[in-house]
Length: 188
Image: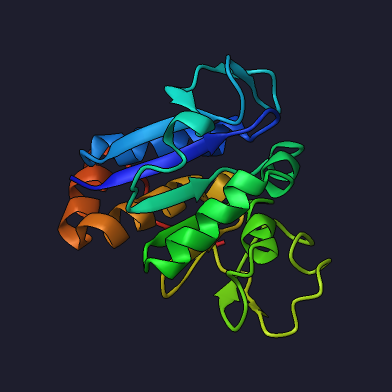
């Protein structure tokens, strides 16, 4: 069974966090949520999430993927946490997946994981950083090797489904997506 870690920081974007956790669990993936510290996590819009555990309890365990929800100041807290940076670098060295949405791709950049890659983020987040070798795209989801990034709350479902597909394949993605009753894309 695939195993995914979702670190939860104070001020994370709850729509992104819950969508990621929910859709990965619908796919039968073991999702472990871990607070940066003990206790409930108050998200950016005031929703309170109760992590399964703390980061200290699971940081040395093996995961197939680490997924960072965005939001501010949540992404800032992730960026400033040396445990997160070391975990991301270890995941990359081991050829495992790292993923981030909204403002959180900046955490991947600080960890050196976006060098010579394509990526996306919430508008202005990665653009404000010195990333000369990173090709910034405005797509909803960008996968480049073992790194997957996405734009924001409105792309959270596409992002989570892309994560399911990376871990379990296209058929698993379809089995999760079909019962969601997503509308067919409309011309705008």
